[in-house]
Image 1 (tube, one colour):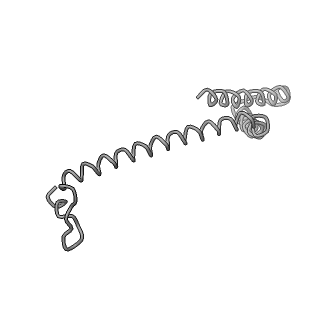
Image 2: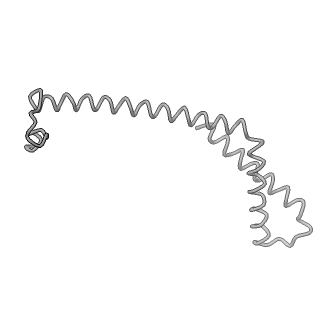
Image 3: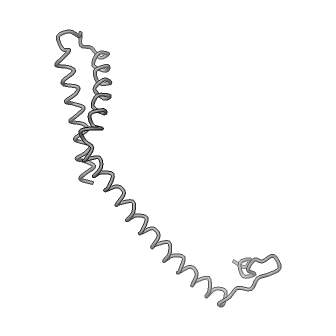
Length: 115
């Protein structure tokens, strides 16, 4: 979680730096209103995204590794819970059916209709 916050703050800081640089370069030549501020923000988003792709490469790789690790832990825990619950339900079904269920003509367990 810490790496996520760090990466997000780095992206935000990069955006603000690019926006500030554009504003400093153009503040005397452009009449600043809401439209020019919006266009400056759009240009800053594109510019900071391109810079982030290069500048924040290590941080992004660490973030991706943490997500992959968390995903693997979650998948392992899910598989463990699923196997445990299936094993428990298999034992329960065996006790309900008296060990082995008898198959009827259609190949369906006869005790299933009674449930």
